Image (cartoon, rainbow, N blue to C red; front, top):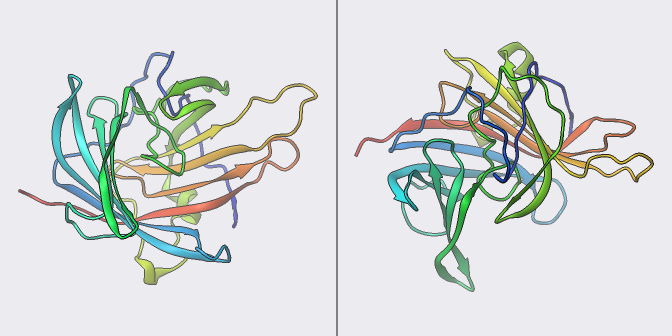
Length: 264
C-alpha cells in the first residue's frame, strides 16, 4: 500500500474512551437525521490472505430513542450487504446525539446457518474511536482551532485501555486529491467534496516512547470529512514505526460512494 502523506494543518486530542477527557472544544460534527443512509466501499485483505477484495457496507439512521436518559440516534450497519432492510446480520449502534459517542451496541450474526441475536453491549460512559472493529468515529466535535497537543492520553472503556491521541484540522480538496482518487471504479465511484469545508482527522494509539525502550509501532487511522455529507469521504487504517521511517502504510482503506435521505 502507498504511504500516507501529511495533510493536517491544525491539531487537537482524543480517543476511544471517555475517562478524564479534557473539556470538549467547539468545532465540526456531522449532522445526522432519521432517514439518512450511505454506502461505503472498503478495500480489505482477501479471505485467502493474498491480495485484496472489495466490501460494500450500508448505513441507515433508523430512529431516535432515549437510552439511560440520553437522546440517541440509532444507526444500523450491514457489512457486505447494501440492502436497506432491518434483517440479517447487522450491527445497531445507539449514538448519543450531543457528542456522537456509542453507549449501546446490538449485534445480529450468522452462526452455523442460524441468525443469532440480539446480543447487547452497554457502555455507560460512551465509547468512540478508530479501531477497525466497531463504530470508528473520532471524538466530536473536532477541535480544529485548538493548539497542538501531541500527548498520549490513557483512556478506559468497555473495549479496554489504550494510550491515544487525535489530531484534527481543516483541509483543502487539492491536498486531498490523492486520497479521493478511485483505485477501482467498478466497485463504485467515490463521492466528491462539494460546497462545505473539509476536515482531516488523524488518530493514533500505542505506548508513548520511553527513552532507550524498544521501538513499538503506532496504530493509526486517517479520516477525511466534509460538511455536505453524513459520513467521512475517505478513511484508512494501518501502522507505522515512530523511530526511523515514519511512513504510514495503510492495511485497510474505505471510500464513501453514495448517500441520501429516505422520508418515512
